[in-house]
Image (cartoon, rainbow, N blue to C red; front, side, top):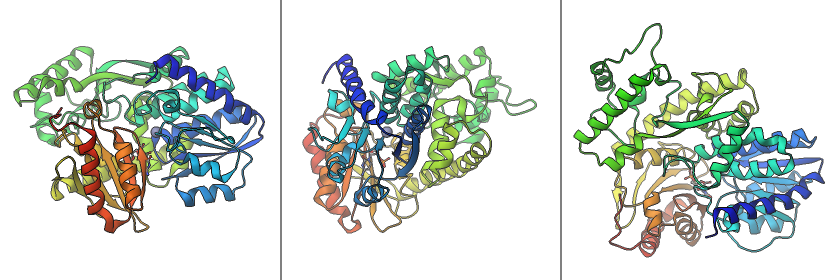
Length: 473
Ligand code: C5P
Ligand code: ZN
């Protein structure tokens, strides 16, 4: 691995190469991924292009496979800019023989140069795209190389990174993300600092925020509304006045009281202090957004974006990112309500079907009860409560008769050798599927009748990656 400085320099150099291709164009198709990071990447790119008079046409894909590439080629674009995807298909993109820029943070499928393509990816510069920088971060560096005035887009790169959970393992953004964070702060658009890390600080009644606490799962509180209300009342926290009080409505003293009581509660329930520390960490506030809205907080913002993109409504999320605070924002909030319900139902389903342990992995199969586009999110949430010494694989049927797999691990497992991206891409390929991603989170699509064979391959691949005695939690 290179130092962070070397990776940064490598990325900036790659951006300068891409800059030439972009400035020579009058229009571009921007191809991106249907999640919060993909949408943030597309918004950064489309805004930056618009500012220099280049007409941008955004298109979104669940997965960049052969048919997606053919539909892109059919558009006959002057220039195609791939953001938050593309690196896993770099060889195939190169075969299309079209002028292209790829700004992605997924592990590239092939090394080497491709003459028609400017390829911006931290892995090519000795870095790691799983937590150091997101797709939106790469798109941002490219945007900033087009014009320093694009520094205001750094806040969207923070939303993208948080959407890809890059702040999770160390409870703060790390690596190149911190440089982007500084840009956003310097632009006066974003503030960050320590706070409770529970979801819903801006928008949920405090007891709801506690009730949905998954990381860590708090026995006796998580999932139990009445217990959460009683817990807060006992601390003398007033729950409502004219309206229900949210975390942001509490004063500093009240916040500290709740945080320490949660720690005490967790310790009494037998949680390790290492797990409990996860309650507190760095949080990111978008200063120009209205208080009490999802957009004010990077985590809530990214969930709002997922609620659009994961259900085929990427354009709504993109419109919000590009400034629409009227119809698109309203639509996104409505979709968020449904998304939340789907996640709650998904977690319930996993409890019902259970997680099956194998030797080195564990899995559940949601069938068609969880949509393939959110099964990865559900897997991430359930993994908080599962055995964290083995990666979790989650299966769901896709509408076109394939089987979607989402794999989730921990950074502790990565430190002892886990690389889900390589395990899943090889195992999927061996059964006629396609997969890729990051060391800590990856995905694939495989033929349904190959599920057991795929599981066996994954079990063996993980066994080969990690020493047997390694059981970090
Ligand atoms: O779909 P899921 O959320 O499980 O994906 C986890 C990560 O793996 C994401 O970053 C996604 O872009 C990546 N992935 C990939 N190739 C696939 C499926 C997922 O690179 N075929
Ligand atoms: Zn991403």
